[in-house]
Amino acid sequence: MRKFIKIFFIVLGSLLLLIMAALGIAYWYVFTPEKLTPIVRKQAEKHIHCQTEIGSVELTLFSTFPRLGIKIDDVKLINLTPNAPSDTLLSIDRLIGYIDVNALRKENELLLSEFSLLNGNINIFIDADGKTNFDIFDIDPDPDADAEFPLSFVDIGHVKLKNIHFSYVDEAMKINTSMRGMDAEISGMMHPDHLNSLVNISRGNIFMAYADEVYLPHVDIDIKLPTAFSFPEQKLSFVDVKALLDDLDFTLNGYIQIDPHDGNLLMDIDY
Image (cartoon, rainbow, N blue to C red; front, side, top):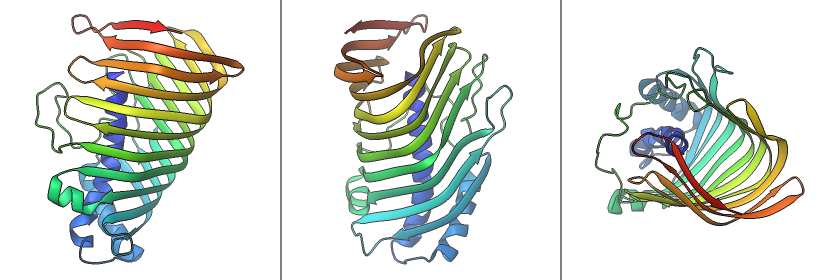
């Protein structure tokens, strides 16, 4: 679960990096797509160490002030990794985001009021030796090293996924899961030591296998998932989770935790 949280914020952070690359200049000027797109492409090539493709970039500042709005079309991150099911890490038709410029500049707070990914694929892969297809960003090479959190908090007001195909394959943990045609909304707030979030998946078809045993064989899913994740404890807690798998309706409560001694998963789930 820690890997999943890390993956999500690495991908989200890399996309926000594209926004921040243009922020300093765009604060005073409104760029046309013809002027802005090459700037973002250059910054992406500098900070993202794999093949990147960006169709066009548009932004607004004055019409949405104090929110900075940005729209990026045809985004692709391609990273050929041995044994990975796909060479494409991310392929999105359209990315739309808004951040609060005043909160970031004055209070060191990242308020992401809206963020949308429309039509695309996200493919996460970890091989048996722990090598990943998403280790392509300029981040701390030691994820366990203590580091000062760069922002006082990150408020994810509204993240929307529309028709997204998601795949996660972890050969080391023997996990193979995917979600096809996912429509979801995510909100949350990340502090230095914990993350609170609410995930609402309204449409999708899920497949899940562990150690070559299939647990969910392509079933339709509808789930409301409130969670709290503690980074120091590496513990994910959830209360009153509402889920519908095909025609099976149930409620979940409990936690999943990574054992700090041997790295195994500890679970206590009631339903």
